[in-house]
Image 1 (cartoon, rainbow, N blue to C red):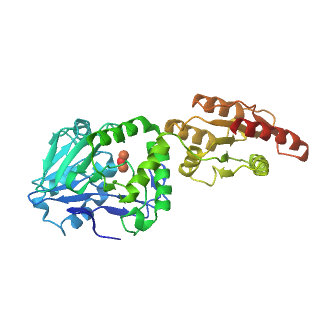
Image 2 (image 1 turned 180 degrees about the vertical axis):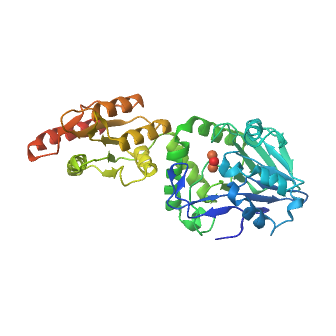
Image 3 (image 1 turned 60 degrees about the vertical axis):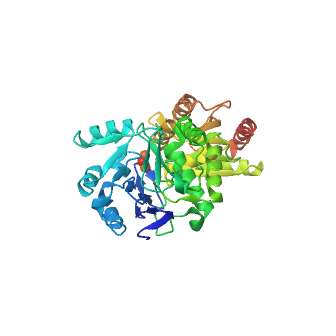
Length: 397
Ligand code: FEO
């Protein structure tokens, strides 16, 4: 794991990698994550941009101390107070006695409410800048990218944007901190997963954030988020284009079948449906909520052209993994698209009705009837499934 890594002239990554993390507030992180802090050293002054999860503050400061004595650090820039970046603020204040905290008005409020009113800060806004001596920090409050307190910091002379959660990914392995050295496609995959599960409901604030950066006229040689890997050179345009696609809801052409199954009946129906979709010439992906992390299924929903949801009826209701998953995506607000519902039942049905209510409540289009199969699919159900899949494919495509 790199102890520190130069990011641009006078800017050094001093973050922490946590390759073993598998759950980030309910979001599966198969590659762990990193908490990225950056040390910006000018000719006169030094600033630490963002911090790390509280348990790693000492380790991060040990890295910083290989570059400068801690008592010489002049500023702590808090771009965001969520505990993965700001949970250790009190430890920072104690360890960096000279440093002044700079943050947004929203962060000032959050710090007081989270850590106590004795931690003093200086509020900065879009017209403020700090001269470190050949390195100028400029600030842009970015409410709701990801919290009301969020902010971007820009290092003008290095054309480097330190943008906290925006453009981040949960990649925490023992790798270079550059996306192009790790691999652009796998980094973009991780970026998509992060976007789907954290930023998807915040499209409007993110669009506004990008507009603000454009209005500022800031050149961008480096985009360095506070999770995962940084983007440089031609790949700055690559990542901006990926966000443009997400914000425009320009996604894939596949149909996704998502199901949970109690006694394999709904699973069998899902397989029958997928077989027919494939036979019709369309790309189909299947996800079992019993075995696939919801965060990965959520990315599939975001990327899909159409989605088909399946659940058995249990106690007159949909099966609890489906109920939980529908709640999970409801707050993430995926873009509207054509969806459909199916399921198995025994003596009373109820799952598809509940799924329909939930999905229509999220704004999805559901022009097709629900497919309900009693107990398990038999050969006598084949023509009903044929007709239903044809109807759904016609609605999606
Ligand atoms: Fe990485 Fe919203 O914190």
